[in-house]
Length: 159
Image (cartoon, rainbow, N blue to C red; front, side):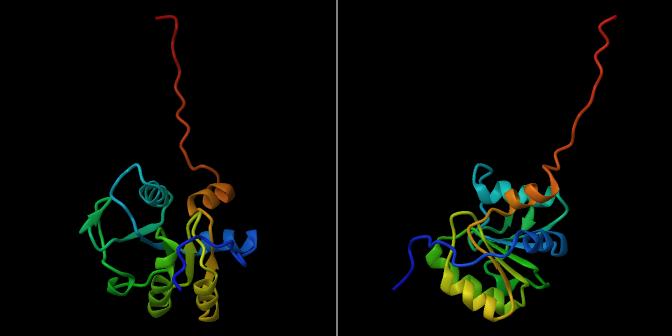
């Protein structure tokens, strides 16, 4: 029977492992990346780009997202991907995990509210690190600060 609801994650990496993932891996395929700037996937991808990650859109309905070439699936990406960041319904997670394994990704990251324990176990058994139901942007901010530039200016009141 298809899993249509989010499960409670049976496991997740320790905080130190999550920080290591975010430090070590820099090419992120965002599965389900929307071109709508109001969608979480779009805001997260923009944040990752701003913080030095290479973002690879995966959306079969778009040719480009955020000015970047979009791919219909993970297996059509012609270069190595480190992290597969999933913005899809839990029922859609298993085939994405299968593709992540097939392309040799290092990490499967299921965004906040997305968990699929069976698929996560399969990824882990294939040697991938797995993060479930956590936002990559929130976790990055937690470990590395907001990254937002502070603008300083002086107002001369004696003019």
